[in-house]
Image (cartoon, rainbow, N blue to C red; front, side, top):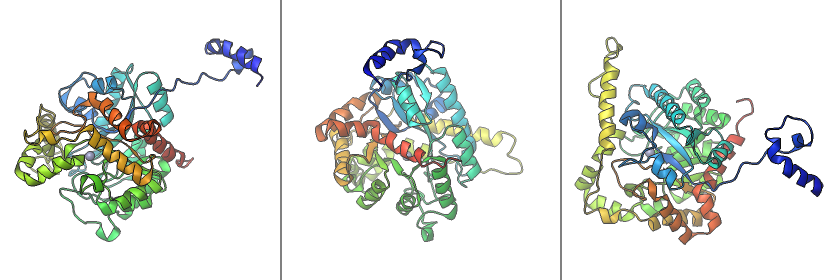
Length: 425
Ligand SMILES: [Zn+2]
């Protein structure tokens, strides 16, 4: 294109947006959205707060994560993890996922001047450029523990673009899980069942991001290997830095070779090396400080479900009443054990985790995934603290790498997963 013509189009550019499609203005390319720096947290829990606590999640809260403080601190993209804790035993997880999706849409509509659902990275950039928060939807703790492919497809249609693969509480029909209630149920299959493989294939076909957090170590390794597309550990850490329970160096290398990333957890009990030493030395006090959160993630309804007589509302009413109480306890004002308080990880310790992964596999495979909830401490101490993490990152790596860690890596992985989506999916 010749320069004078380009100048003409530039002059006409603004008019082109409203002008009828005729004359030279119609030839102008649509205005490119303003690019804004991305500040993204890949592991947030906020919808459950609106659902169970009945709060306005755009008002600053005393505990956990809320949009008000995070947005004021610069966050403009998140992956929201709808949490179906407790509903897994009774195959209520699809119902609970649907309730939370519906609740999310209601909140997003009510605050449409400040937030919107993102289905693609391009959506996220456009929403962020408009000054709002872009929200990708994922589910933690189970969407259907039998891994029904039609349920999966329906959730994709409703806007879900990521799923945490395993449950949080025990093995399911798909894979083994790490931590409390763990067992080696799918040991002979390296942690991943035949149905698990079918779900991996279908998530790849749909272009849904697989989150390997909470899967057993074997299942994590199997998921990385089985997926055609990059996978993520949305809220985890390098075991070499923080201690057991995270990813080994070998796993991080395999994950990176596939193009995936690790979102670094902010919790004291996850990345706080000094804090974890205190926990180990003081198991009873540590148990006491984490009791309310465990009551939520490990929630089990009282009594039993009689399939002949409990289908008339009584059972679910009891279930919901008890679950709401567990949720509210977990998000009630909370303070750490006085002895442990000075051991809560600092922003520099957080940056140290990231620096380690950059050294191990380069700057493209690490991001932020704080998992900030009630009932525990972490870094930053609340959602107004994201700038502290950015400042600490600037002390350990280049500005270009900081941009990657603060969101570009997340969007690149999502784009890659979606590019590999089958065209007929
Ligand atoms: Zn989690």
